[in-house]
Length: 182
Image 1 (cartoon, rainbow, N blue to C red):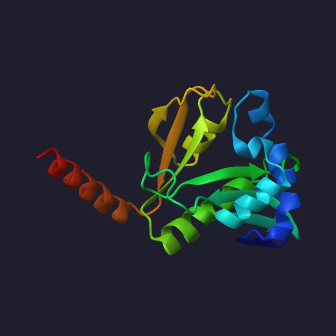
Image 2 (cartoon, rainbow, N blue to C red):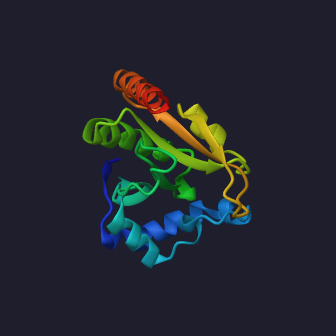
């Protein structure tokens, strides 16, 4: 069995649309208005173009995907890297492909290439298992919010990927907040 971690290519869009659409069935059933849940091939292509969309290919077939937001559109809520559009082909869920891909992105991309101390993601409280799954995988809730879109309470979660750097990050952030108060 061969496993390849890589950036998605435009020619992967149809397979990624299938994986994402199938994986987000529960999201649609819950009535959550997440773009990935309704993504067509054009939106997948836009995501590949505008973000760092990573895939785990097993024996030549994409089984999991997650995207690292390239722009700083979420600076209003976090200055840490943000990952989104996490999906695993339901036919292979339970084999660990999603966790492997997310771990690879956390370590190889976020920690080693970006040089960030931690990574963030968001999910809905009303989803039956995502919050607890991410918490089992080392994420902690850091902010709860409701944008009034009908999605209910959303949670921003964070996972420390470089503890030493994270200590420095927190210290500097606290010092900056203290300086701003004076």
